[in-house]
Length: 237
Image 1: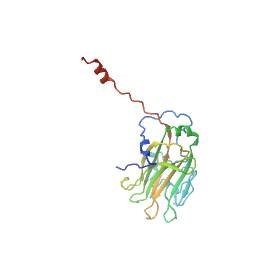
Image 2: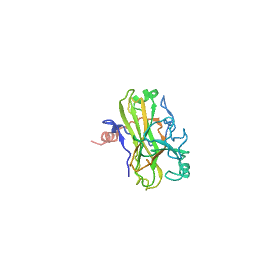
Image 3: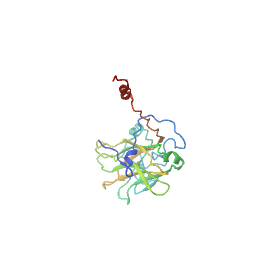
Image 4: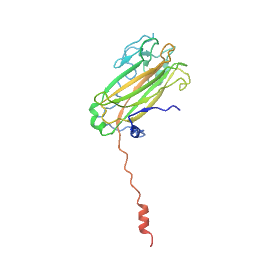
């Protein structure tokens, strides 16, 4: 079984929390809904011919582009409908273009500073991730937490998804992870990156990148049982 990896500052493992409770109403200035804009690359026309097209709301490097679902070396439209994938998805694009394929979006969360600094905010990161048959290009998505400057406070990662995870099928698999937002976070960078196999096209795909935040309720206080003390007091001499 593949495990999602957590990249956190020293001692940060103590702050991990899996949220089993249903989402409640947000409090204070915690942003509601998905923080990621254009999460499925639907904001621009996708490519059917493998040319590199700009992706609205994202800074890209290398051959990163938006492809349309369809026949050939990409998931088909029936699969897209099954995951509400729309028309487009993120693709590592053509090989032979200099630079690692990446797509990055920065999100300002400074309005939630009070809640974040109180340690009461949790972030989820999820996406559908995959590739093409036997291709070994690897997709992964990170949410990187920064303070008001350029200091990296930690990160939350999903993926990579490899060809064995996909049973060597052309498909996308949902991956998700959750963690507490580090105190003093003021910005997150959501980054889709590809480790390429240098065998032609970069067949690493992602769709429906989602990062909702919510208030993290403190754990209820445990009370120590006093039954033993009562029993000792009531025991005959």
